[in-house]
Length: 271
Image 1 (cartoon, rainbow, N blue to C red):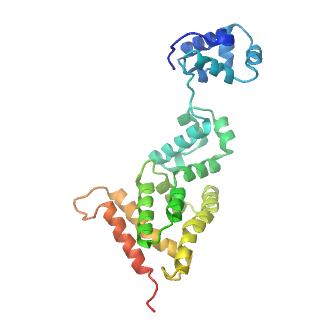
Image 2 (image 1 turned 120 degrees about the horizontal axis):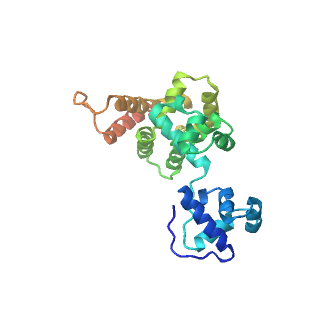
Image 3 (image 1 turned 120 degrees about the vertical axis):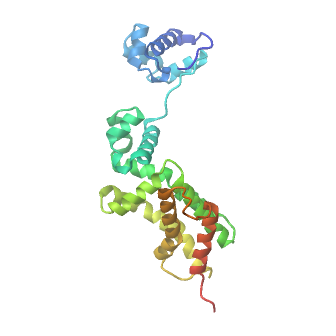
């Protein structure tokens, strides 16, 4: 709960005092105290409290802040739910993400999660978009430089980061796609993200073909050839962990080796 530095609050001084008493009694930040409880502490009806505040609690929070107290308050339900769902995926897998489990982890109600997303499918879509590397890959590919190897290597490094950093949302989503490709949730994710991947990374690959830097192959197959070996390597590497029996180069060197292998395999034929 925010600490008090000085008294005050102007025309709402009595309401500020009531809010601080309620916050102290409940052990919460002022912003998290229900208006009903503040009204009770002030000895007035909730409707009277709202009328004095002009219909919203914003003026009360401002008055509390002006009195030298941080009203606090948590992030919106939507942000808390996305973070909670990502943590559940990281710890227990995609099956653990139910609206009930997310509500408990986000410290909110199931109806509030439903109101924010409309259901589990949209929640998963937002989580995937938040923790996927799509936006960063688009930025990498949009840079105006002509070094093909450097760009492929940058893509590999970003993919490695997205697959290995926690929360590990990407690996869980990929596992779900392989295990249950026809579920509504999986199909919704594919329908939303595949056009963007094909338009972003796929579009860039098409530009490289047109410029004569890559062999003229099917864009989906070229995309698979580009990311498939790295994704498989990272999955195996994560599963096996450090092992003295495996003579693996460090991740940076691995990205370079696989990038060079991709460029050799897809180099245009000599004239």
